[in-house]
Length: 291
Image (cartoon, rainbow, N blue to C red; front, top):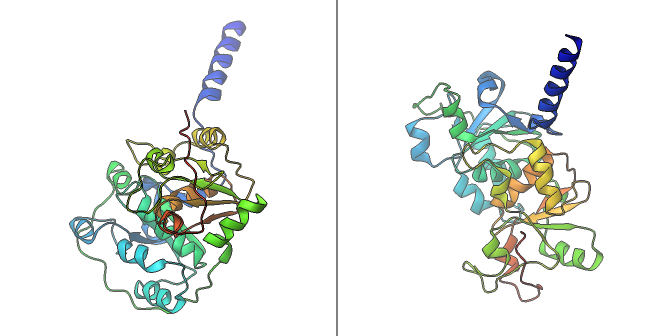
């Protein structure tokens, strides 16, 4: 009897040891749809307006993700951002949750912009709109009431934004890990998109942004899976890093995923390949696809 019990406990222990771990270093960055208490957060919907009007999280305020994406550039227009964020009735002390229906790409960009502007508590809804529906949570169609405009005190955090000049300097000093979050075709130079030149930044590590997500659910992968992905790509979460893509959105997903797993010094080269691939003073190589 004791032998059988010991064997059962050993088997149970082995099962738990092999079970996927969800022990993110910073789990507070993600909010589970089933656990979201609406009164505790201001919820922002980053989907297209027509999707928002067809149904959204109760009380969610619509955010124009496309306008925000184009309007950021280098984040120099602080007054303009005070107006944008203030029009949503937000302050830097609000607790925010953002979601989209675009594999988190738009929501992560909004998350990154707000964090760059020193809005302290910004989180993503795990799985986005698909996750909300899967949790069978309540859906509202009436737009949220127009909020009272605010005048948030924004203080850009320079270390969260990488620049071309900073990356060129890093190529000489080696003080930054450069992480390319684009597709294999872009990284290897097979797809130039609309850029003059195609390829990769010399020495850049490659991990496509979408690999951080479960393809079926849109949720971030388990902590153990993320750790393996970063390790396989040669990404050291303890070292300073700069991520990039074509225009800052996919790179924002990577920043979020790395911070979720404990990275503390990750910047976003927001101008990304649309600047690097069209400049005359930037070195470019053909990236090699990782097997």
